[in-house]
Amino acid sequence: LAEFANCGQENFLCRFSLKLTNRTNSNSSLSVNLNEVKFSYSLSNDTRVRDGIFFENSNYYIFQLPPTEDGAKGIQSIEFVLEPLTGDSDMFISTSKEFPSKDDSEKPDTIKAGENFEVMEFVKSKNGSLPRTYYVTVYGSTASTYDLKVQVKKEGQSNLQR
Image 1 (cartoon, one colour):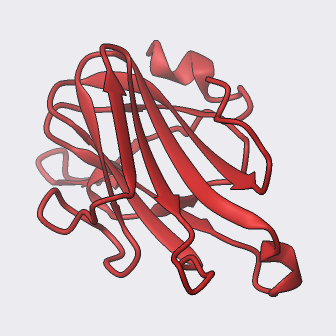
Image 2 (cartoon, helix red, strand yellow):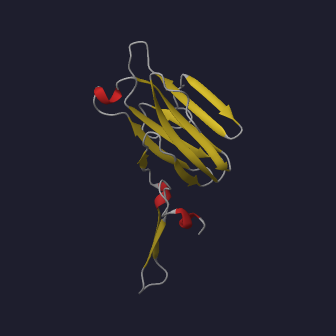
Image 3 (cartoon, helix red, strand yellow):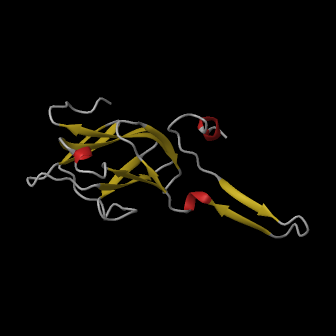
């Protein structure tokens, strides 16, 4: 029930289970665990998302650069920051696989890790481009809560402020 207290807060994603019961026959019911269905939640630039995950489960996200060339002008890199608040969670990112696992995760240009954070940064290539779409998986080695943030860095902009 503690998770439901956060459902009304901005940028907190909620997870639910649904159980349907036949009133005329108490021996039959249908349970649907919506946590097992794969959904990708959209991430926005410079917006922190607070979420939670169950033991050995994954949450999925998608981040897309602006669709026009003008919207992406001056972009040097994209940083993804995972800050576990409780438990142990890991981040995997792919530009081609919608629900990436550890094996599908692409090697970013920069990886920074500390006791309480993990940062993956993708830098503009020599030909001046970055992939438009990033698929992010957060996997819970244990039940955990975390903050996830994306920051698009433009020319002359300093590192992400955690």
